Length: 365
Image 1 (tube, rainbow, N blue to C red):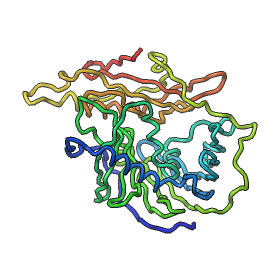
Image 2: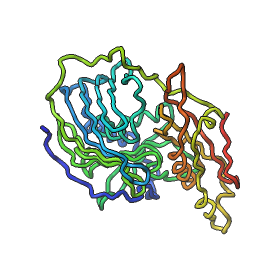
Image 3: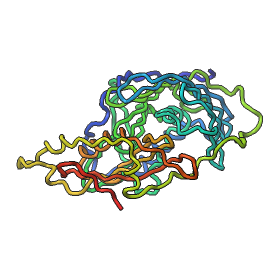
Image 4: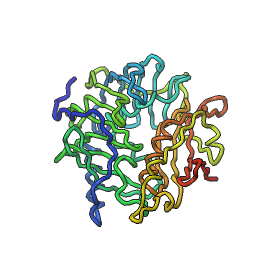
């Protein structure tokens, strides 16, 4: 394997990870947090330009939202240079090749987005801080958080979209990375309302902190697990990867569907349960939900297969309401969106009213 073990394991059975954070200081050192996140990204990303080309193989097991196994498979990756990678997927219902170049991403004909959480397993090995791209174009700021996993308290840095109405936004509402105490090695990544990727058996490979084992979980259930069975400088081709004529190029950006057009694409809807929000009371014993102004708006990114691949909170008046929406929209599915005879990724936003007795949605137009 040619990687030297450095850090072992965090005992984890995936408890509920999103919890009320401790009170924050009046003013955080933004520059220091940004520098620490950059240091963590640099030390944990084996795709830096100065590294030699490498080959890796991952054995993976996938589960459904209830933690029931849905199958096993392998992911094989050859990394030649930044923006030049080849990935081969071998799962019972997902087989094919993906080539990443500076010109774009190419896939075997007919191959759609990876199965849920397969991309998380690969990304958290190759480039664990890439998810910050999800916040591009939005005014964000890093904030300090902490997370306890297996009795170990990890210092974390979360990128947030500022919200003047909600103090101490819970960890996992936006992308957050948690480090080994006193070190820069990333041990956990949390996003989408509490979905966590825990990085274990950290080894040093070409001077980078690379996890040999990963687990993806939510609310006590394991959603995916992966184990690096091989990583070395061996078996590399002599030239850069070039997609052949049989491969399809992915669109550079997902198609934006606005207003009702996005909601009407839905095949399965799960409404948020605002019961907890409705039960909250203010110091005068009055229902908190009656005092909340403004809806919860969320953006979804959907794969070619119609399954939700990513979520981002756009606005919300209450953390409980936001969590209810996140828990619901993760379970939505959509009819594939077809452009010129081919299914493509797409994105759009939904708004959920908190005070409506029938939970009617108002879609932004």
